Image 1 (cartoon, rainbow, N blue to C red):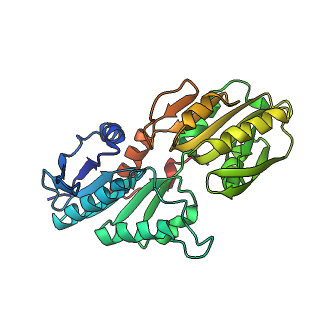
Image 2: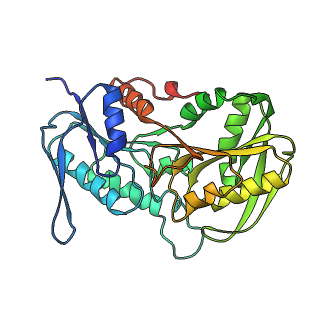
Length: 311
């Protein structure tokens, strides 16, 4: 009997899993996530997955229970004799803790990778890891999708592209900004920042000329929004005509949305790897559902996934 594709959703990403399943052309699999009185999670898959290709859609943003739920789902499919289990993690949480940058700290990204493999995942599918080298933390295949496949068509639809320039809000996002700058044949600048501590910026300077330009900031995560809002103000002070931003993962902690609405940013374009806490006129959301569905199809049919990217 031939294996079939079965797509399931964790509780944090059901909105996206429905899009992916619909785009793929299958119904979303049925499962139930039960909770005991003390809060323990007990997922149950309500259909047979024996010998099938199983895909669990679950971003691992806060709370931390989302990653635990995903691990339990993977374990349940493994014990139910699924042939191949793929954890589809549009936003891979804990990715910012990817190195030992001070004494006596955990490398959480590596620990998450170990847990996913130990639970029984045969493959990981994710998008825009905070650092691409995190793929090396896994001893199983990793399909690393690129948000540029979503952002480039959107940018191409904008008027007056001749006046744009790309900017990195920090040194860490330089490669992302450079990729887009090269694709559109435009220049780029860097906003060099220095932090006092996590989520707190001490100073920021612009490396490059932005006077008279429409600047597009490029980053993978927008958390408190302090970096982007400060960068936008600095760029406007340096003579930029306008500033908009492309950010894959809208974490948007605390008062981030309020900061954006009060900032010099004309628009922030994000992907729906994480659901917005509330809508804002300054935030535009683009769906990654079709890209993930096609990636799942190519994986199942043993076709190239990189062929889906825009280089």
